[in-house]
Figure 1 (spheres, rainbow, N blue to C red):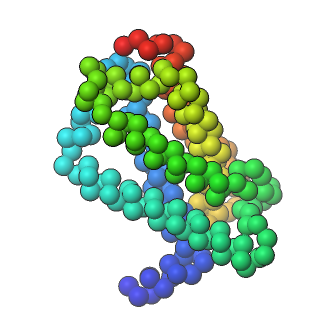
Figure 2: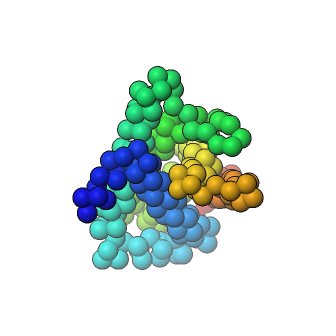
Length: 217
């Protein structure tokens, strides 16, 4: 156990732990998007999904574990960034075979913006008092998404999410040394596709509510 603890104090150990915690949240986003798409099926389906989740006895323990994983990821990201800036004396940049791009250069910024968005998201939806709406969570979500300023903010954060994920998913393979001249281009394409699917999927929800449904329930 002490050897494992020591490993996670090393630079490579911290990077691998950050990659693992990030991957857990990518998997969570896939599941979260799958459930949120039930919004398109109407209030009964979406509220049934929400009630199913809230009735699970393991919901709170899982939320606590996910919170710890997220805070660990954020802490390691900040710590590694500071360590690399100190060691190099220059701004730390992720690099890959094709050189640094916007997504790789802005990982710490987009990550912190996503963290801020998650706080806003929880305040508006999880703790938004959806019990007071006639159609419960569905009614609350539709109300929020039919406010132009809220929807535009949400869409902006989804662009940030996509930019963060496209490099983050690639970095998981790079961190564990799974680079290969043949497979790396494929990994990059898969990373881009998954980032686009997640960002576009979440972004479609306010667009559907705002432009198509126009607040109708």
